[in-house]
Amino acid sequence: MNIAIRRKLTNGGVWTLIGRGIAIIAAVAINALLARVLSPQNLGTYFLVFSIALFLSNFSNLGLSRSIVRIIPGLMAEGKTQAARQVILFSLIVVSISAFIFALMIGLGGGSWAAENIFHSKSIAAVSFYLAVLVFLLSLRNLLAEILRALYNIFVSRFIDDFGHDLILLPIIGAFWFLGWKNNLVTIIRFALIVNFFIIFIGLTVVLKNVKRLTNDGSHYKNMDTLKISSAFWMITVIFFLQNQLPVWIIGFFLEKSDIAIFTAVIQLVSVVYAPSLVMLVVIPPIIAELYSLGRINELENILRKSATILIVPSGLLFSLLILFGNDILSFIYGDFYRTGYYSVIALALGMFVNVITGYCGEALVQTGHQAIHLTIMGITTFCAMIGAVWLSQIFGILGVAISMALGNVFQNLFALFFAKKKIGIWTHVSLDFRFF
Image 1 (cartoon, helix red, strand yellow):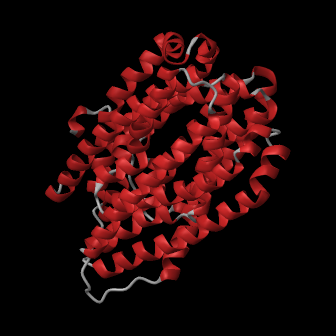
Image 2 (tube, rainbow, N blue to C red):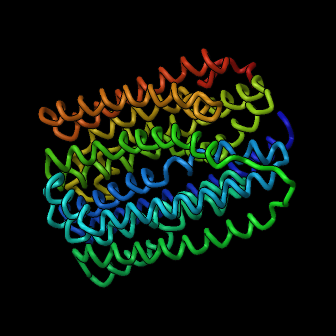
């Protein structure tokens, strides 16, 4: 393996591991405290507000937060620093305008209408202004984090996008619990907005400092080419977040708000199975783009399969813990009310574990110019999974939604694995041959 690539993997992996570890601990602690200061209905509303905001923020960034992770490393590898700077500044301007327009539409009545007519929730309608501000802030925050990731400034990227928010918000929620302030949903959302403002200020400062270091070398990258690549990434991002957020919305529409709280708690608990893979996922995409642009296909396959094989060990241990003790873990973190989500934990954990086994097949397609294939796979499997979720929710409640989500993830990854081999010529799954190392 090339020394420079090894250094990027090692340094990025270490910082991401630290950041992800802090993020998981902080997120679990915050959710445990929220479950004690908010009623299940209010906690369901809180999760639903952030679910909607996350989806709309990723919709409003037009795919630029994903495309720059592919574009910038390739330009930097070719020494085109001025072109990289141009792409960064163009992305910041476009996303700022787009996010502001989306926020304006939500704040001027769109949010209240959707809350009352789609989710039948007066509590969401009451915080629609804050939802609008949150969409704008999350759009900028995500873009800033991805710019820094593309520049291999992994630690600050993870602080902005991953653990910074929860780490700062944790003592605030802790104070609510300690002082006995309960069901202050609006106040908690206000504090979350203030924290996001602070993180964006830090992120923007670091990004502009990095941009100043990019020298003028006469290189250029067409803005229309950036938007062209981003359009496919935009659809992929939208479908990806529909995969993750639509189940919550389906539950919000067909079931009770308390079911949203249980299901979201389950998803956050199950996410630990894929957490080791998320550590490397922060570092892997720009490396895929760089190695593919340089034609080093064999080295690319070697890195991806080794990563999947190494990551199966911690993920397997976490998967086993959830299967054996998931019921008790749910009760300990969130309270006895949330024990009913145990079978959903089993279903979703199985789906997550298959993701780990197949490796970064989807990301390999996306970062090598085959995003249209990945988009088609995601679109078909997501559509089928959501139809199944609506149907099964009427029979099994949140367990039916979990089963449908798990099956959708499994088929999506199996198809992506097949097409990664067919189109790129590489496998990405776990290797059982120890000589591979």
